[in-house]
Length: 370
Image 1 (cartoon, rainbow, N blue to C red):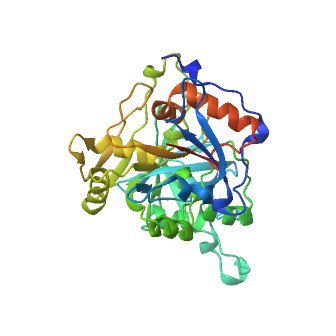
Image 2 (image 1 turned 120 degrees about the vertical axis):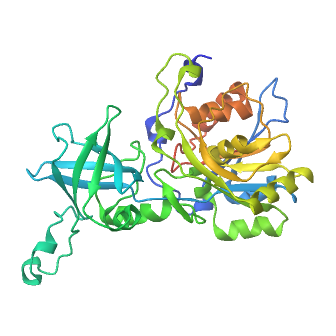
Image 3 (image 1 turned 90 degrees about the vertical axis):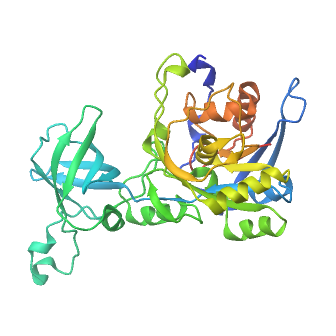
């Protein structure tokens, strides 16, 4: 299938630079596949707070409870040259990172990790009088390896975990189409809003954005009307933003992501399915996880990594409906949406969203595919 089929025109001003003032007041485009798709898909313009009107008692909403790490950080060489890092993973006490500005850095060189105010992390060498009350991070690192894929391996001079250090020095790892500098006040707001209200398991370096629209009162309202909730974990990686650059979609190398689903939540999903309820995945991440672990007998608990690539023609085993944001052209996420809704219906919905001035991408509006 040609990658060019997944292209569409998007005015740059429709790329959301900030979230809606209230999570559930974002807009919701409902795409009903049961309409006369031969003529046109049935499209309804709503607010996300109204999503309960389209869910039934017995349906099961499956949410990804991964928690986004403040994975973006700043560093500098001893020469004073600045660098910007993106934490990817921690392996055997070392950090895997993407590091801008590291072209001239060689293995064995030491760099300084900066605090959020971009101060050099050397305050621990100074007396309180010299510091002037300023608290700087005492972290330095050694570049161990530069891999051909652009990943750098850093060994941090600390016994603290990556999560602890990043919580001190890091910024939210917003995607590149959301323009940000190192403003601390803005970063504080982003740390709250680029995170679902139910996030609990740290490990993602990108948010499961379909879940950003839920509030705790809205989730309680859905439960009151008989909608079941099930929780799964898939740690979203940077590969989710990797553009498809090959001519044929099937030639794209899909990214791996770690997942886990426990026995109680697998049972909740299986019971809902057997009772005739719809399995409504919140986001492409939950969809990918569910389809990875699904079989003819239902969902199996477990953990592992998935490289499942869902494209048009895929036969869904467990997912009946999906909540999702609007995705980039020529992306694996758009291909997954088209696999569920149909390519023609998806592109028609996107044209409608553009015409109606919906807001796109991570901080943008949502779509419900029924």
